[in-house]
Image (cartoon, rainbow, N blue to C red; front, side, top):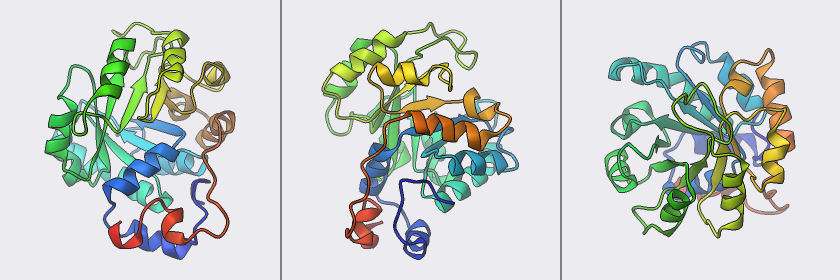
Amino acid sequence: MRSQWYSAPAAILAGVNDAPRSLEWRRERMREARLYFVCDARAAATRSLLEAALRGGVDVIQLRDKALGDDDLIAAAAPFREAAREHGALFILNDRPDLVEACGADGVHVGQEDLAVADARRIAGPSSLVGLSTHTPQQIDAAAAAGAHERPDQLSVGPVWETPTKPDRPAAGLALVRYSAQRPVEVPWFAIGGIDASNVREVVASGAERVVVVRAIRDATDPEAAARELRAALPAANPIAPGRGAEEAIGGRVADA
């Protein structure tokens, strides 16, 4: 079962999923995305967790595992890459633009203390997405105002609440979510940090259309149901209009994918 964002025929999608993905396709897919799941290699080792998350409505999966060396990280990327391709989702690698191509990822995510966006883009490759973490209004403004090569393709805004995955990062609160929602930020942004089914509606009420989660899906008894519940709380992406060609429906021309 594919993510609900897609309604093109399965045969067409399968053909596109077997082909290289263009930057335009990836950017459009990120704009349409609503639910982003970050996971470590060990939790995803059997691929069943990723499959459940994607069936539940996850649009983007990220491999984040700073403990792994290069060879192990490349090996760990396989289930992420394969699951993302089969479900028409995006696969992002954390913090390693130099391994994006080897891992078959759609892009990389970097933090404020990591490589600059332009450097990450140069290393990852011209067709790769670059996401960026932001924690203050100033960082959001800087990202939104950046020029073409310096501008990220996606922003993570937070942490909204403190989280054990970032123990040294103080919570930015819902105020930062409201700030992002009130600013003319053309880059798709996702609220992040301590978000789960118990508070996701607060985040949406503060103006977020997209969220990033870790524990809410990873640690759930039923990851598919957890993802589905989160996805249901988020605004729907723009539906694919009836009668549109399959090339439009997947966010990019088949010939250019």
